[in-house]
Amino acid sequence: MVQFASSPNSQDNPAALQSSTAIRDILRQQRAFFETGKTQSYEFRLAQLKALKQAVLDHQTEILAALKADLSKPELEAYLTEIWVIKEINEAIKQLRSWMKPKSVPVPLEQFPAKARICPEPLGVVLIIGPWNYPFQLMISPLIGAIAAGNCALLKPSEIAPHTSRIVASLISKTFDPGYISVVEGGVEVSQAVLAEKFDHIFFTGGTAIGKIVMAAAAQHLTPVTLELGGKSPCIVDTEIQVEYAAKRIVWGKFINAGQTCIAPDYMLVDRRIKPALLEAMKTAVQEFYGEDPAQSPDYARIVSDRHFNRLIQFLHEGQVFVGGTHNAADRYIAPTILDQVPLNAAVMQEEIFGPILPIIEYEQIAEAIALIKSKSKPLALYIFSRDPQFQDRILQQTSSGGVCINDTIMHIATSSLPFGGVGESGIGSYHGKASFDTFSHYRSIMVKNFWFDVKLRYAPYAGKLGLFKRIIG
Ligand code: NAD
Image (cartoon, rainbow, N blue to C red; front, side, top):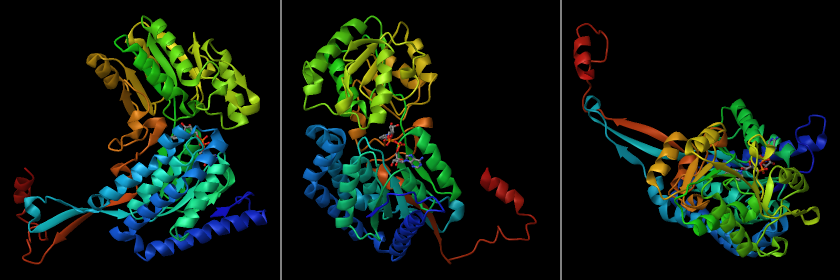
């Protein structure tokens, strides 16, 4: 692992130049490692996945402590959303052989005699840059795909969750040869220094604005990117619901990790006829989950930094507080807050909230809700609460989003048979399960001919052959 404190980008800064040199050294080692061909075999990849699983199991206590220190993450939430990666590793271990298998495909008659197959091959050396909100899972989960697909990897965790960054770095350095998988720690400057180098794939999780910077850097080397970004994920609620269950599922999805979840319902669009009953049920759910004073609850996380805390408390004045609204700068606490009567032009309705504040917008006709969603960038997630299949279909047909979860929140991300990713400004590409393997693989098309005979039709001279080709093409 390598830790950088100073700017490696500046040409005038000797420490900076040293840091860039260190990054280049790691990459040189990783290229050499990849060229040995070791990562190609099933046995090698399987052994590395098993080693990763064991390392996560062995470090659980430290990982949970780091998440507590960075985000006051409750232990159960940390298990469900971060240590959860063990489940993904198990699946990769189980499926690896079938994922790696070349696939035979048919060849057209005019190619006869020939065979064709598609073979997944590793891309080479890949870069994985992560955010701070699920700082362990969002480093390890893409790494599973990178290992399964046979790549070497360089990881750059978020500096905003420094304790977790440390544990990721130490776990990786204890488990893997640095020539195979390595971690560089540090902030924006380190990220920029790493992005200046050439990789075979860049997998970035973070905000849309930084995603554009990453894509621009990747373009310098024509490096393909996966961008797992954010956005405003709407939650639409119809009258045809089980009110108590809907309320609990929305409250849970919004307030886990204190709302700092890329697929948290960002704002709610609710049919005005069900709104009073639903809001009351949501108030009850908040009290049931976190007690009369959520500041005292061991099950409620904190805002990651003063910058984010100060950004979020500005939103509290942009509507009528229906639930919550209190905050405390000393421990970066913001109560689970439901904001009613929010004007559409309020700042809280313009940018991704990424905190425990849920604006409520009521609608009379579903067309109004659809029009509002379509006036914004395509979201990462979209939630529909309704028993009515026609209502569901209408929204599905008239909107677009990275993923959809009907009658629940968040749970689609925990289903590895569903590729997870955004669309438009919420991201490019997807992962989880087989999709992770695909993301870090190149599918090579291979045709094999033999020497049984040689059809001369395609060779010059061409005179008299065109009519036959026209008949073949049809
Ligand atoms: P961020 O974009 O600020 O930072 C992500 C990473 O980029 C960090 O490692 C950081 O060091 C690096 N970085 C920051 N500025 C940079 C720059 N100028 N140049 C190069 N690298 C830079 O994101 P964040 O604040 O850590 O995370 C919050 C965002 O991430 C939200 O928008 C959220 O929706 C999104 N997110 C998306 C997913 C997903 O799976 N789609 C998951 C979690 C978070």
